Length: 248
Image (cartoon, rainbow, N blue to C red; front, top):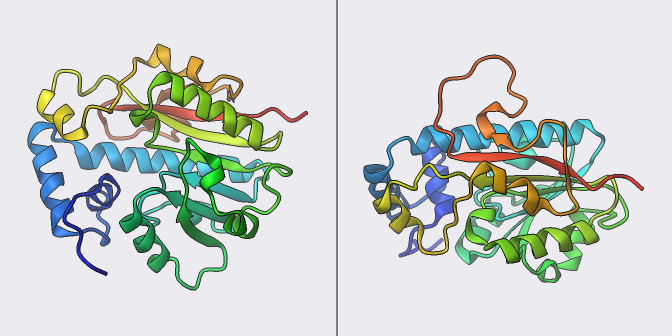
């Protein structure tokens, strides 16, 4: 696989998680980001732990398939590892990450990877959707939407979540996160994230879900969501939770 000349947030996260699927350009970008905001590894490990707890809670509710947007690298506790009995379709828009994900999942009969733009669900390959998310639109599905709200304005985010609500069957679940205002006083870090990066106060998150109904846990700092026991202190850089499309 040819080495890319541009870093990827997905592969930078893999580096922070201690993974093996990143390139020198990603490490350099991650190290540069750490110069302006140090606890990257702690924050993203906490976020990945939240993903695992959220996915397991959805699987425990009887959901057997997941559709993942902005999936990144499918390792280090990603969805098919958190719910090994489920089928999973990972999607992303970055061609390098897609090829990497496809290579990692070669031979898997329970998880696939393809192109998919969360803001246009019609871009997801119908054949892959049929194979890995059987019954999409007819049977409850877990929709994973992590790392995307950060790069969508309120109008686009609300429209996208409403379209996903319409497409998903009653009884489906949505796992989602939102960046808080942790980086508000760190202009160097914000510059690395780019002009599209959007921070939101906690009070602004739940209203953006539209018709999706948060579980009783609410939208809270991800390290606190259904945490069993005490955990090491971590900056409250992300808020998140699980919401449902109530069964008819």
